[in-house]
Length: 145
Image (cartoon, rainbow, N blue to C red; front, side, top):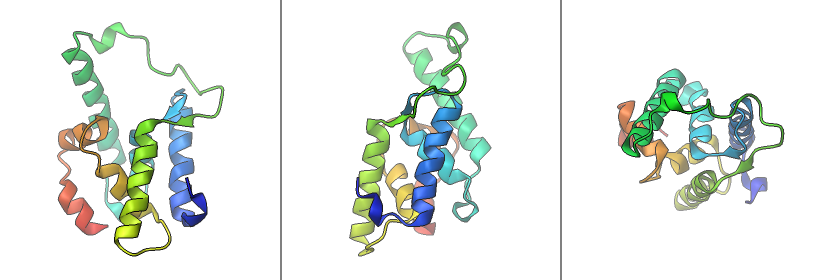
């Protein structure tokens, strides 16, 4: 990943996403960690708590679809991760889409807004399902970025 093209705010979002994963005891940084990190930024007008609740609800629904009750599982993570969380496929794809969004707009530098565009561009997975649960209009969000 070409992090030298990332602005300070984009780098801060990536670092915050890694910390989000670490704080939850997870060994991988997923796109939902990027989303939650970006929701902390007031300029995007996202409600972090609402998104966190939607992600938790999405997980329960996904588990139920597989015939598993969330209450039957051990809590995920179990405290802070012992090693530095690595970027998982979903977050790598989100960052690739962010670079593409910057290029499409003719921007040489990648901002936190581009990262958010990359995250919400996913068509499948936890993030788009959670955005629907949280009733966030992705088209309206894209227009604001």
